Structures are given as structure tokens and as C-alpha cells.
Image 1 (cartoon, rainbow, N blue to C red):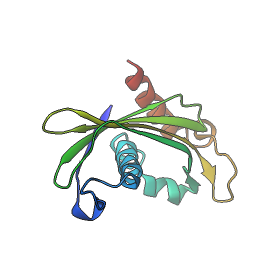
Image 2: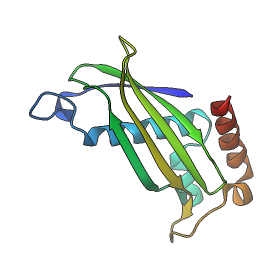
Image 3: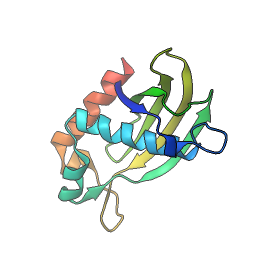
Image 4: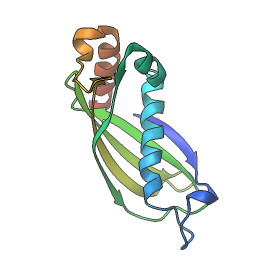
Length: 140
């Protein structure tokens, strides 16, 4: 598990003064990119190597509201990695209280610039090992 921290911004709020639901997906992406960077898989490097990791599915369950100025911690876990596809779980918690605010999950794959699936295991074994180790650490 790797934790990403975010302070809720005013521009992320809706007319009711709470964080608009669409922003959680952005936070998930920031947390996911942070996770990959922390395990030595920088997204910019992946793009330079010629592969991408699009979102195939995403879900989000809102438990309680986040307001402007709140700081949240997003716990990120990778799992069910096949070398081509992987899933990410997210838990958004209030930093001050630890209260669970939101949970989510996203499904991804690795593709080349033409959209064809890419096997990290076969083409980039070092990156595959890093991601495999992160998944194993999340399971324990």
C-alpha cells in the first residue's frame, strides 16, 4: 500500500460546497501515477518506451463528504496483475480523523500506441518484476 495525500481545493467543489464527484476519479489517477513512480515505474518513462496504461473500468462508492480544505489520504493497492492487465483499489480517508470517505477500483491494461496489448512480462521484465512485487506486497 502506498499513500498519496491531497488537499481539497475550492475549484473542486460543487454548488453544495462539497467535492464534486468527478474529482475522485482524478484523485485516483494521481494516486495511481504516484504509486507507480514510488515503485520505480515512472509513467513518463513508460510513454517514452512506447506503451500506455488506459483505464478500462472504474467505480467509486461515496461514503461521506469531503469539503474544501480537507486533506485526504488515498491508500492505493494493486492486485490481480497478469502482465497485461491489473486492478487498483483505492480508499480515500480524512487525514485528520481517519474516516473513510470513498472507495474505488479501476481496471487497466498495457497497450502500445496502436492499442495492441503489451506484455510487460515479455517486453519489459524489470518493470514486470517491480509491479509483481508491489502486488505481492499488497496481498500480504
